[in-house]
Image (tube, rainbow, N blue to C red; front, side, top):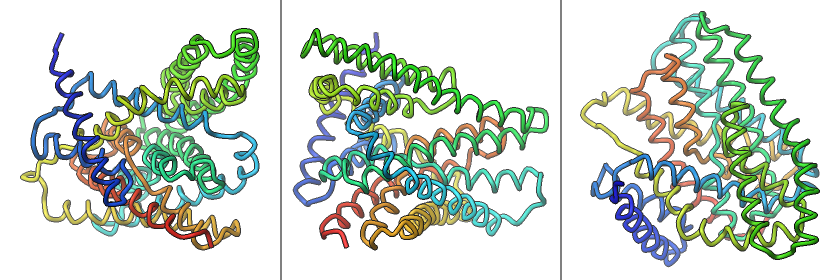
Length: 396
């Protein structure tokens, strides 16, 4: 066994806590401190902690537990009441960044004929911009006490819908850009799998609700309920990714929503899981965002560097503007509309996953990772700061 992971964990937890305390002292969300901690101890600065398989695995468990906890706190009645608004926010949060990304790439490297490799690269740049990483926003809203608010529910619901739309877009672009890969057929298969996942989740949810209701009724406040709840989270996460081709965080969230329907079960599970999540897994996840970032400045051209900065700024503005506009159409006040727009602009592991898929499919060159990294760093740091500022005043 390689015991370096133990040392890495000690360093991560220590630096995350120290910087979190500092951030709280200067009235900045603590999650910012955890991300900066990863940048500080990672490969770009101090080189104390390196990206490793155990660390990546723990970070993945961290984001799953974070999304599972979010599902536990999500009221289906609230989502139903904001469903149309969330769908509108998600749609505009995809359409505007998709178009902005295509135009940005084409403006830098030239407009290409439809169907050419350069055309699909431009479209894929837009696809990367559509990705939303709700983990950071969720943690900030929870810290500020607004996760269960109407704005928080819309952000969360829209982000989940974004995830589904993003997967469909990814399938279309990678499928259609590969003339030997089946094109529309591959995209249709992914759409079908996405629908099947939610259908199966509803069926499984009905069965699991009865099981957990029985456990809570006849064996209340026992450890078996939280343990079985965590098992449900992991199985749903695995099934979403391995069987249906949907991001595992969606499976974790759906599992949390199912457990939420049993009142006693959600209370017991939240109390038990929050400790391990807060103590270990969540800090590792946010620190890993900074640790995973490795930048080779010597291989970056001035054009690519300028593009990366423009890409990050455009992606954040496009997502914020699109979602802000949708919220205004839904008759939200200016301040709440800004909160929704800003809450949707964070990017993290989702953008990296989409970019990696593009490189694997031959649609995107690996040199464009610098643009994705710039987006992740800027949005991960700025989103919590902007949200904190927007929540200083009462809703207009």
